Image (cartoon, rainbow, N blue to C red; front, side):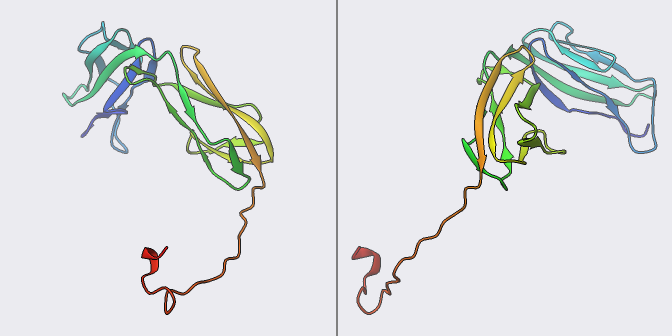
Length: 185
C-alpha cells in the first residue's frame, strides 16, 4: 500500500467494551500482512481487529504493514458507565424527525449504546443515522437506550397530529399614535 490508516484515529471505551479497528487502504490497494499491536496490553488489547478495553488508562494501537507503513489509534479507557441519560421530547408531530440524544456521566464512558423502540410500526430508525427516528403512525412508543453492560434508560413519546394554530391580532402602527414604540409599552 502507498498509504495506511486505521478505521478510527482515536476512540474512548468503557472498561470491558469492544469495537472493531481495521486497517484502511486507498482504493485499489490492499495488504493482507498488517500487524496490529498495543502499546499497553493491560489497558487495551487487539486480536483479529477486535479492540478490547481491559483497564482504565490510555494506550496506542499501531498498525504496521510489511512495507513499513504505519498508522496509529489513540485509545482511552474509562470506567464503564453505570447510567445513561436519554433525551427526547414527550410529543412529536407525525411528520417530525426525532433525534435521540444519549449521554453518560462525565467520568465514565460507553462506546456501544444501542437504541431500540417498543413498536416499529409507530417509529422507524433512519437508514443512515442510528440516532434518528421517523414517525410512521400516531400512538405511544417507548425508546430505550441500552449499554453493553445491560444498563438502560427509556422514554415514552406520543406521536400525533399536533397541528399548528394561528391567532388573529389587531395590527397597531407605531406612527402617529406610538412615536416611542417599545418605550411606551
